[in-house]
Image 1: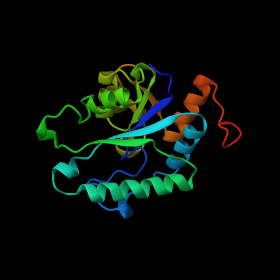
Image 2: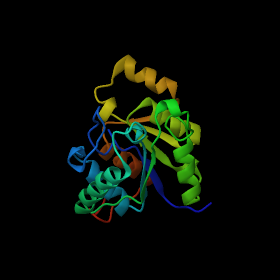
Image 3: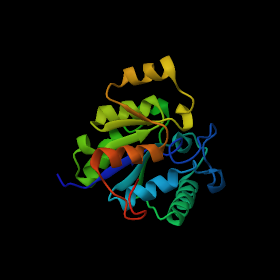
Length: 198
């Protein structure tokens, strides 16, 4: 296995505001404040960043591949403006009824990423905003991290503890930016873009 420094992120609720009706056009993809800057900081500190996202709107006929590509092109343009980039976006197009192995909480997407990048997923953090993100991370052997944005916003007390109890070993962060700070403290990494992550 190579020693590629890799981070896997969920999309909706981690990078952009979650929409109940799916993001169907670029204008609906609205970044969470600070999230794109956090990706840039990861890049400049030496991490490759990829997205793993469930996109059942494709399987439901709510959005087609050209629209998905347009949304992701918009996302990448906004990231570029912040000095960041994503290596790739891996997505599951299936509905829950399809019974696939790539829709989170199944680990298929993450396992595919591990194969593509020839990395040991035990060394890879997966950051999400839902229980199924944490479950997929655990099933694939990744390090599970929860950010309290998107669907996890406002979770606290017993409700948050119950989610963490369901996936032991998960780490909680207030935001994607706080996750980057966690990595800085854990690994002693500096950010060349900002003269240091601190």
